[in-house]
Length: 384
Image 1 (cartoon, rainbow, N blue to C red):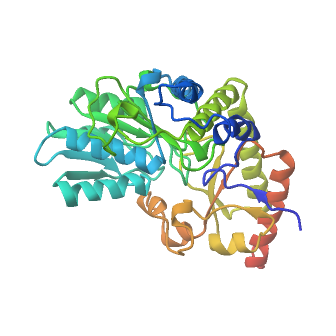
Image 2: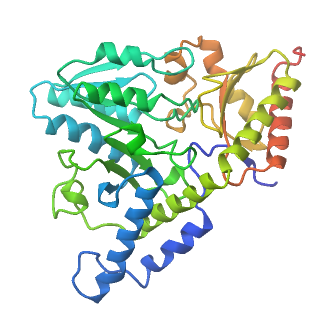
């Protein structure tokens, strides 16, 4: 049997061969410690600096403002814990919203439990977006940090980050944005957006797992996440993994090229084609979850009446997709993201996430549409 069509790019992306080629020498020949003063440290040190500049270029930052980490979850931890502890207040106030990734929500819970932080979790609308007026009403003089993701990993819904960041900073609070899903899929500019902290993740943009970065605006003070030898501006000690930094830098460079050559428009066309094929084949049964207008170009989250999402995908082995965030897979309970948007249990349990990527083709879309249509009809034979 041939491999199934891969439509789970929001869970993780394949490593681009150009990324794999770029990192190979740093696993063998150029193995030196970039902090070493001798010749073996020269090439790794230069590669680390180049990678930092490539990541910075993708998001409109300066190279010294990029801090490499081992994961997006670690970058989020550095941003949230770092800002809350650096504020040096007895009960720092942190604001987030209900559809954030668990890496943010669980860090907020830990801040409350371990450091006495006050945490406000704001509701979202039925389209998954946070109303700026809701944030404005929640801000106080004690608010030290607001954390809102750029794009939701399940629905692809885009938040109005510039508006939200402006409100936070007007009240003297830092603004963190988890851009794990957005980086490489839509243009990012930390200056234009007005954010102080922003997370970028390698395995969401064709680099290996195990590498990410946090943009830390110059002048922002954070408590370190790892203490030690002073690497990464003293925020994340430990000898740098040069190979993975090169991977993230190369991936960022490739993503910038994609953005400049119309890749988002291609994915949007394929995504919409898949949606149209399904709605035509299953009239009245297909429902889009999230905002139709404010979402990533590659993401389609929908529910099909009459069949749970896990059953639909099990009946369509020709495709590989998800019933929601990969972090929630395996449990047939309503997605917390869709529940926060007000979807009823039946519709939430029927949801599937179809996320496209660099190697998705028109043939893949036709195959997926046919497979999902047949699976839906088998699951509910009486349906039209």
